Amino acid sequence: MLELGDAALIAGAALLIALFNAVLAKRLPLYLAGRRLSKLGVTLHKPDALKLVPDVEVVAMSYNRILTCNEYRITDIVPDYASQNALLTVAASAERDAENPLGRAIYATAISRAFRLRKSTDFKELPGRGVEAQVDGRLIRVGDSRWLETLGTDINTRLRTKIDQFLVKGKTVVVVCTGRVARGLIALKDDFSDDAKNFLAELKINKMETLLLTAVPKKMANRIGKEFLIDHVRTNLTPEGKAREVQIFRAKGKVVAVIGSDVQDLPALSNADVSFMTAGGSLKSAELEVKPDFELPKPESFLTVRALASKVIDALKLNGRLAAAQLVLIPPALLSILESPPIPFGHAAALAGAIIFGAIIAANSLRMK
Image (cartoon, rainbow, N blue to C red):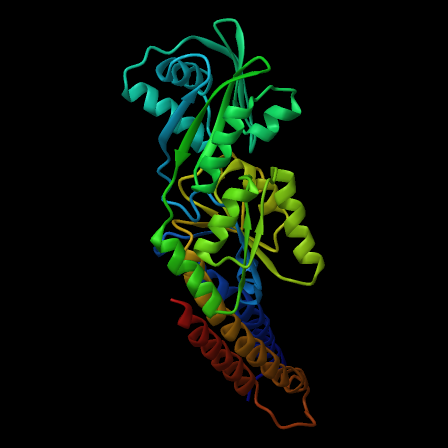
């Protein structure tokens, strides 16, 4: 027969294992899911975010890189005073240090044509608006016409007509100006992604609403919305405007996920219930103080995360019931320490029960692998 000290030791071990099982029940499925996602190229920064993903009702996304192939190309150059080459040279000189995809496409095109760029200083980039820099001592701005108009820029009727024509065709237009005078336009096109169309179709099948948050004008965005059958389209948005739209949907009681790739998506990502950052954009995880919940190799990976998150929820629910069920072992284990326990319950039985519950919890969690 065991001594009282031995009985207490075995009962204590049973209690410790039961407590360990309770922690294991909550954390092991999340840890294993993170390992599995890592093998699929998905980085999980906040494991608890997996619990929210199955409840997502609205998926908000930006336009660039999410719905497009991320291959901007210049389609039209419309100078007002100078030649096409001169206009592109000035624009590329100002965009030399740009991080936005339009600026990089303009710069890359000028370099590929072996243009001799001019020296630029005092570069400044305004996400969602454009850039400005001193080029040969002149203030050059390249960006969205609405932003330039707020600065008092004169855009003549001919150029305005061209802007409307390009927008209706689904092209993105930037205005190149010297001081407060528009010198011409550069139109760029980024083709729609077939993968994005399939992705949005899957979202609809899974009964999730889609929300497009974009800085592009309404004329262009309406075409995008019809092409992709998007539920909600919000246009002419600054980065802060994107965040505001996310807050509006959350205020309606919706669980909102945001998928972004650029610095201008950061405010929206920060205001989402659950945030996803895709590869290839100007957002770099290493440079962010507050990281998004997930990093995806491509937008469609959201569906993979959601499918796995549903399994995580199922595993957590069953683990929670198992962790609660093992609590029945605790009173008998404590009473078994007494010399004459009111309930005949062996010390070893309590220990064996805790071990068995732990094994079942671990086996259930391993479904995440």
